[in-house]
Length: 375
Ligand code: GTP
Image (cartoon, rainbow, N blue to C red):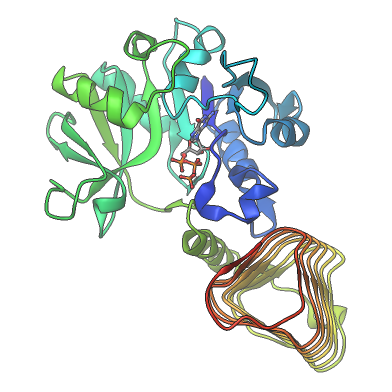
């Protein structure tokens, strides 16, 4: 079985952290999201994965190489003809449909295949999705998940007896949504799909292809329950980490690895070679990456700290994501829902209130008392 992972989005909602790494390489409890997906695909019998890349292509190629978890990894780049005379004209991304057409030769015409939005954390049974697809003999079968507020997603009108999706609405208002069943961003597709996607043009599969298939009665659904979270927004990225932390409670560290009088409140996860100074209080819901160095009398709650971060003494951090190799000086306070970009420096005695974002490699030497982006 082959699978294509859509991996080339700009991840604008996760800026500034996504300015320095593609969203699907963001760590979820110290493991890149992409690796969690690849491991599960491998266990489901997938032998070949095609990464549809654009933004962050080089980082993804370096990370995966030509094989991972026993699967062959191939790359399909969005890059299409653009104005070569204008050096500032960036390659145009192909959206969520165009990359599937672009990879037509790699996916082949003989067998149905899986397509996944790379930014979804899920425990969906991929084999069961493929089986539903084979039973229905439709052109596309969409994994469907139930949510409370469907207005942020693609919502379907679904016939529970025939498993047919009779209508597909992309991001409807709350009143218009015909159900709470949403497109989970994972599909089984028949190669006939290639006839529905234009060549070498950006295309949204959700807006341009699925509504057409629904009207032609060749669009089917596969409802499932369990874990599903789209990590595209900062609060959802934090939530994804918290959910995985909860399911891995036993991985909490041995306190004796660290300085005296440390208090930990589970669940927490601590990466290799991390150190915690005397009197610090870590947790609940904290992930510390590899080589993170926490000073004395530090308090960290509900936060994700990427690898290589240095946190000096008497710092307080709550509900925040701290990027790779950030340096945080003494007596710093960081409020909720902040994002600190990779390599930033927060100098001694600075306070950042809730909702402040700091761009990569920025030095912050004064406190900020309103939610804004420091560039
Ligand atoms: P936002 O800018 O925050 O909306 O994020 P995004 O650019 O990743 O868009 P979105 O969340 O809608 O993308 C869903 C999935 O499709 C993600 O895994 C993206 O990496 C991927 N994706 C989105 N646009 C493209 C594209 O133009 N080309 C490729 N190859 N993948 C894409």
